[in-house]
Amino acid sequence: MDFYLTALLQGLCFSAIALGIYISMKIFNIPDITTDGSYTLGGVVTAVLLTNHQPTYVILPAVILAGATAGAVTGIIHTKLKINALLAGILVMTALYSVNLSILGRSNLPLINLPSLFTLLNIVSDPNQNTFWILAVFVVVIAFMIGYLLKTDFGIAMRATGNSESMIRSLGVNTDRMKITGLALANALTALSGYLVAQFQGFADISMGIGIVIVGLGSVIIAETLINWLKLTSVWLSLVLVLTGAVIFQLVLAFTLSVGVDPKLLKIVTAGFVLVIVSLPRLSLLKSS
Image (cartoon, rainbow, N blue to C red; front, side, top):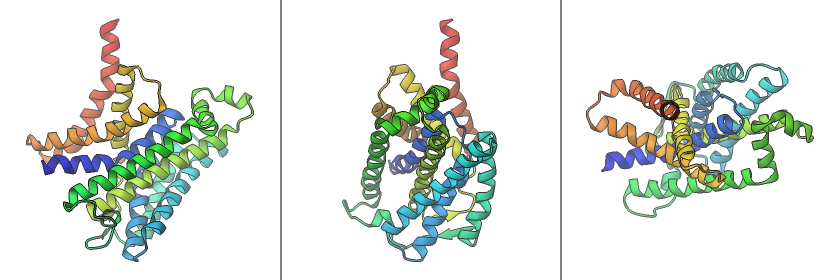
């Protein structure tokens, strides 16, 4: 049971990255590869500040600012220099490897026996259950803030930029600024996942972000599949399903390991699972036709 509880906790840690991918890919239709670097950046900034005994109210804004800056740089390269969004993300992600290594100072930094977000409050005596409640509140607050933002006039303009850029531009909205803001927000959320995971696993690693985009993408694809099947249009329900997708993704991987699959094959299983989820809607369309 603890095995699946750990998977649930990891799913909650990855909820923020799922929300970030949802904003960049589903709202703005931008395949943002900056994710790999900004996720690691969040973990690296967290680790360095924790080892320097900085409080949570300093670390959290620093992580958000670092991630937002990385996303904004990608947005500026894409919109102002007219470089393909995918290439812009790759360029920033590549640069972030050196930035992260410079901040961390080495390849791995342990955080054992250091105070963290999960030791601030003792809601229950069991450490895993205590972590669960803290994570649950943290994720609900983030999701509520994003949902509220997307329902405001500014959020509606963001969504309209992804749906019909030419139409919203004709209404006087600066779409370049919207894209930069959207990518900054998406990568701030991604950095928050790095912030949570670094504290949850007890270390930050320079390579922790390699391939992490598939975790967020897989979570969003699960959510999108459920949204299409249920024919939902509500922003709030969509965000709930994105969070659910992040948890389901981790539970599926946990089940895979529990049935005896070699951990060395986990990346193949992950890629295969995402491929199946991506293919399901298309297979359904083929059958219906």
